[in-house]
Structures are given as structure tokens and as C-alpha cells.
Length: 332
Image 1 (cartoon, rainbow, N blue to C red):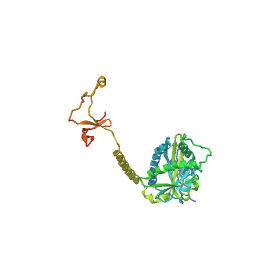
Image 2 (image 1 turned 135 degrees about the vertical axis):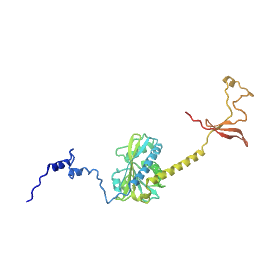
Image 3 (image 1 turned 45 degrees about the vertical axis):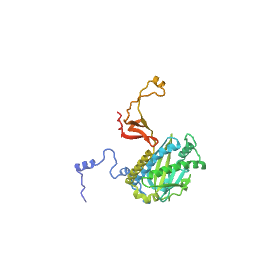
Image 4 (image 1 turned 90 degrees about the vertical axis):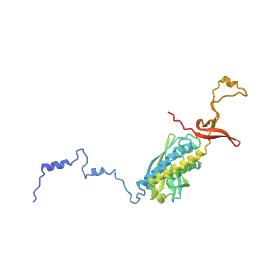
């Protein structure tokens, strides 16, 4: 029979030292395991993530740019205050996306040429009726209730969808030149032929605020659509495209400035004349100006003096020969 071992006071103190003093659960207990359940994300091996964090970030930048462009453009199109912001971006299966879209919802299926496959865009019914009301000259109030969007209203809404497609094209231009075409419109997202239920996809949600009303717009891009360019979805590609686009805009701006007409005036001279003398001027009277013969005159662009020059003739046309450029004065 083995002899029982008695713990020394030092060993007892060591055991008591490892016990939490703030009421926290013991290591290895069920409560300790529960602490980490909230930080664990369920991973579905049947539908693994297809996009890296870097690729998700690039898609986020593209659609944030799209939201900014659409905010200003749609405000002018609807003649109302419009604020659009990207609410979220995530990846999952196509069936996950459909489960979060109410039915009926105005749904448009796009073709992103030259990419394969199809892309889905949905608007919530209230946002659709707000846009339709503005197009018809209303104040932009949602219809609400059980209102079903009619064929005529869908036809009116198509002009808004086409505008959205144009802005989406421009937002993608930094990465790829797309031609977005509408191939299908429906009020039931489940009937739209876009992808298989198990196909991986990117979901992008937008919050739309038109006047005081708030709604949602969603875009679903299945993985097969982006597969041919998935290697190009990097922030470096986006930044390079942004710089290239800025250069194109600068060249376009210079071209427009080259064709801009401005007023040019040659100031022959100035003089102060009493109003009484001005009223009694007669034919043949001579007014002395403050300029001298043989010296260059001031040439004004708009109301500002920009050059010095000599007046004269070029053929049968009046002309001025520029001889000096006047430096702009700094205003304090």
C-alpha cells in the first residue's frame, strides 16, 4: 500500500496562485471554451473563399468609386439630393445572396463584355418607386404598401438602370474596359438566370439616400465572371489605372481649353473727362490720352492685363502684335 503524499504549504500556495481572482472561468472549463466561440467563424469547405483580402480590397475601391460617381450623376438625373455609399462587401454562395433579397424586387441582369457569365443588380421596391416618382415630376416619396411595379413603371425605371450601368462601366475602367449590357429584367430575383446556387460570388451592398428616404441597392458578381481577371484584381492595378485615367482627363481638359473663346481687348489709352465736357463734345474735338505714340499698349484678357503689344493691320483685318508678357501680380 502506497503511502499518501501530503502537499507542503509551498505547493498549496503555488496552486492557489494560478486560480483567477476576478471570477474568470478556470482554464479548460466549459465557460473558458465559451469565451472563444464568438470569435470563431464557421468555414464551409463545400464553398471555400475564392478571393483574397487584396482582391476584395480592390473590388471595394472600384465600387466605392462607383458610389461616388453615381451620387453626383444620379442627383442631376433625378433632380434631387442623392447620397450613395457602399455599405458592405463580402463573398459567399449565390444562394446566400438570393436569401437576403426581398421578393418582389426590381432586378436587372447585366452582361459584362468581354467577361463571361452574368451579373445581378437589385433595388429595393421603395427606392425604385422613389426614382419613378422623381422621373414623373413628383416629390420623391415611396409608394409603400403592397404596390406592385407596373410594366410602364419598369420602362421608366430602365432609364435609371441604364444610367447606373454607364457609371459602373466608368468605375471599372481603371482595371478593365467593360461594355455593360442589360440582358434581362424581372421583379423576381429567383427567376433570374445568373449562376448556380452553389457558385461563389461577391456581394456589394449600397445605401441610397434620396432626399429624406433611405433604400438599398445590391450587386452580385459570380466568381466565373471575374475568374479571367482575378490575377489583375490588385491595388497596384487600380492605382496605375487611376493615374492613367487622370492623365487622360488632363489631356482632355487641355484640349477643351484650346477651343475656349476668350475676350481680348487692346486698351488705346485712358483719360479722365468731366461729365459736363463729355456732354458738350463736338465733331472734331480732340481728347488727349495717357499713352504715347510708338510705345506698346496694354492687351487685356477679360479684365486683366496680360500682354503688351502694337496695334496695326494684317491684310484688311485689325491686329495687334504681342511684344511682351505681363507677369501676374500677387494679391496680398
